[in-house]
Amino acid sequence: MNAFLTISEAKHLDANDSLHSYREKFYIPKWDKKDCIYLTGNSLGLQPRGAKEAILQELKDWEDLGVDGHFKAKNPWMPYHEYFSESLAKLSGALKTEVVAMGSLTANLHFALASFYRPSKKRPMILCEKKAFPSDRYALVSQLEMHGFSENELIEVSGSDKTGVPNDNEIIDAISKYGDRVSVLLIGGVNYYTGRLFDIDKITKAAKNKGINVGWDLAHAMGNTPLKLHEWGVDFAAWCTYKYLNSGPGSTAGLFVHEKHHKSNLNKFAGWWGHDKSSRFKMGKNFDPIKTAESWQVSNAPVLSMAAMRASLDIFDLVEFEELRKKSLVLSKKLMNMLDHLKVETGEEIEIITPREDNKRGGQVSVKFANRDHSFFEQITKNGVIADWREPGTIRMAIAPLYNSYEDISRLEKVLYQSLKS
Image (cartoon, rainbow, N blue to C red; front, side, top):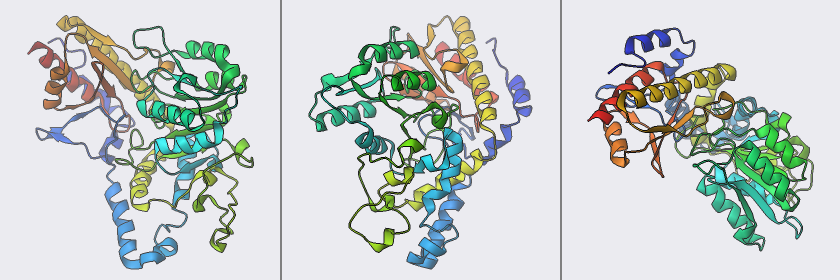
C-alpha cells in the first residue's frame, strides 16, 4: 500500500494543530483498546468529559434542594434556558434575543410554521429542496393538510445531477418561477445526504424579494458552518444540538426568530413559559408574550438534558469559530484527497458526491463505493470505523474539528484499503 498519509506524517500534522488538544475534552469510543475512528458527529457528537459533572451537579441540587433548586441551585433552574443564549447567538450569527434553547427540531419547525406559514388562495405553497430530510417533508405535508391543502402544494426543487439535490441556482430559479404562489420556504442549510452547503444569504434574499417567509433547518449546519442569520434577514430557523454541538442523544434543540417579528401579532402556539416574565406568576388568563424569541417556547427547561449541552457549549466558547471552520475544511479536503488516492491505488469505483468547493460544503464527505454493498460498511465498522450508512448506498463521514484528527484520516485509509482488498 502506497499511503496517501502515513501515521508519522499524520502525527506531525496533529502536533502542529492548534486545536488538537481539544480532542482530550471528549470521550472517544474504544476499539481493540484504541480510539475508534469516529466520523459520525453529523449524527451524534461525542460526549464532552464535562457532561457527567454538569448533570451530577443538577442531580445533587435536586437531591438537596427539591423545588427550591429553581431559585437556589448553583445554576438556578428558573432561568436555565437563558444560560445558552449568548453561545447560541454567537454560533448562529444572531442577537441574544433572537435565539432560545427549547424543544426538539421538528417540533420547533412546527411551532415556527404555525407563525410563518400563512397560506391564502393566492399563496398556498411551501417550497423545499428535493431530498430533504424525511422529517422535514412529513412536517411540511402535515402543515399543508392542516390548512386544507394537498401535497400538490409542496414544491420540491429537484437537482440536475444524479443525487437529485438542487444547487443554489436551481433553487433560485424555482423561487423565480413559483415565488408569487409560495407562502413559506424551508430548506436544510446543509443537505443531510450529500453534505452540500446552500448559500443561505443568496437564497434568502431571492425569496424575500418575492414576499416569501424564509426558514432554514440548520440541523447539519449549526456548529459546522459559519452562520449570520440576523444579517441575512432569515425569518426563522431551527436546529438540533446533538450532532455537531455534542449535547447528547435527543437533547434540547434551538430556535431562531428574527427580531423584526418579536413585537408582531403573529399567530403562535402559546404556553406559560413564553408569557411575560414579570407577570407570569400572576396566573392571568390572557397570554402576554415575551418580546423576544422566548415567546415561542411553551415549557420550562429540561434541566438534566440541557446540563450536558452547556458542557459542550463551554468548549465552543473557548475557540473562535473561524478556527473550527478552517480545520474542518482542511481535514475534510484531506479526506477527499485520500479517497481519490485510494481509488487509484485499488482500482475501485469511488465517487464523492459532496461538492468539493469550500463554500459549498461543511465537514461532511458523502461517498459511494459503487461495487460494494452494506457488507462493506459492516466490515469497516468491525475494524473500528464509526461512520454512517444512508440509502442509496452512501457512506457519510463527518469531520468534527474539536475531536477529529489527521491520524483518523491515516488510520481510515488503511482500514478502507484492507477492506477493499480482502
